[in-house]
Image 1 (spheres, rainbow, N blue to C red):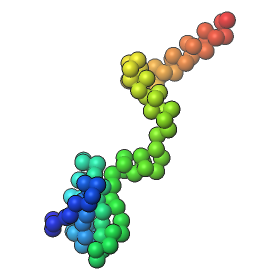
Image 2 (tube, rainbow, N blue to C red):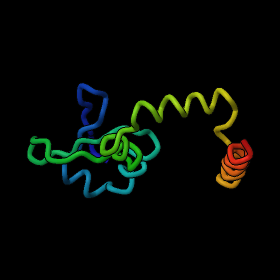
Image 3 (cartoon, rainbow, N blue to C red):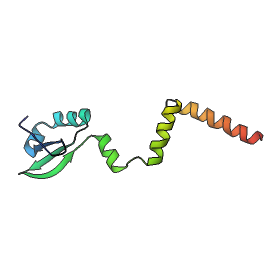
Image 4 (tube, rainbow, N blue to C red):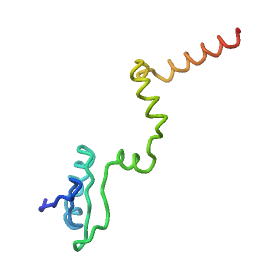
Length: 100
């Protein structure tokens, strides 16, 4: 696959020709290892290849409040509830409020 270099953040840097020739392998690498790959043309960085998960994190980072709620949910053992179970809890809670 040619000899990719390593950038200062530990990511790989590959030439555009190398990226074109080994695109499937590079896709697998960013998906499995969650490491970005810088693609350069004539020694100039032109693009970055990264996993969809990493892209979503960059494009729409999780608000701090959701992170806190997620950790609390895991601590309470409620992180594995299904949507149906959550709906039942909400329904029961609402019916308790109307009885008061």
